[in-house]
Image (cartoon, rainbow, N blue to C red; front, side, top):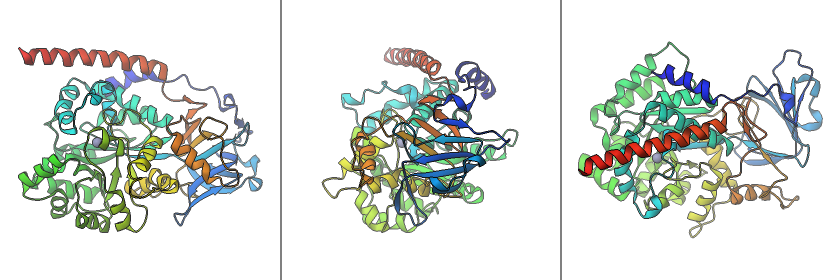
Length: 482
Ligand SMILES: [Zn+2]
């Protein structure tokens, strides 16, 4: 089945490849010599956290990359250009600001086709949305999910995101979309799903056993809500996660209704339930976590549970306010990562506007500094998803880089004597498209164009599929009214 979808995507969406790197006006082919080494040269402003997790801004530096790994980060004058087959001139025409690729710790890429479908501004709550969502999800085929995910991921990439945790009930659509987009993806599959009742921990076992084709995405286990599982499922999740070192993710304490439902069904609160089943570990990533007590926060922090904050989603669904400061105070350091959620919760799939939303949401308590917001999108995201080789620009790290044009709206003017003002501009302006994007040492976006997917064709396909889906949902609603 999934092979059919792959060949359809190849026919309809693959981009006409750039003939060679010289087409990019900042790229210089440098003699070749059969090497695949890349030098990002003469970067006017490079932002990253260093080995001690301190935020730094390096000026006029160069990054040497080999086989997708960062080898050196050195002053530009020390770089030996002749050693590289490709040199990216980051200092030309006003220059480029380089940051680590951003990390989106919670998303639902197969829902992309539902953009505009949920009418959240008409006053639905999270509970009403959750109730109507299956009607839309059931109206989608695996092919729809796949094209949806490609639409979602490519949009994230254009906003500087290089790593995403996808939480959904299907595996193959995300896997195929990951291959098509070259994204760095955690593919968390639900083991107890309303829309996919056939899902169970056995599905994860099958996917682990499958060895006939290499995987582009990293398998993980998901539960939509904690209360959906029973003791047997929890036990299997724990065993699978431990034996295979798989991440486990769930929405947690997202609304007052969910909080109560868990107690009614299990006689325990969500954190207690996870603890009882041995799932309060550093392999667990929870999103939302709004209705949690100080004692529960302490336990989550002590056990290094990953926590994802989704301020836009929480406001749109009238879910409540995440206790950010309680988490940060309990952890004693920057702790929380950020996520976009799906398009029905935050239509704009970027993290910069989510960082700004975080700042505004918690402003009445204390100001979340721009440096802390930057950490949430990079270092904390990598920690939350157990990816120590991503989220920073240091030797030995994966070459996931976002390139932002400096001479652009939003960046200018800034204080040249205090380049950290650039970070403030990046976040408050929010959601700008990257000029270039590198994932694992490969340019996925060049000169604002996606190099792997033909976006023009993609948008046409998505619009057609969206209208077909609306027709199916309307047909079903008519039938049920009769
Ligand atoms: Zn979600």
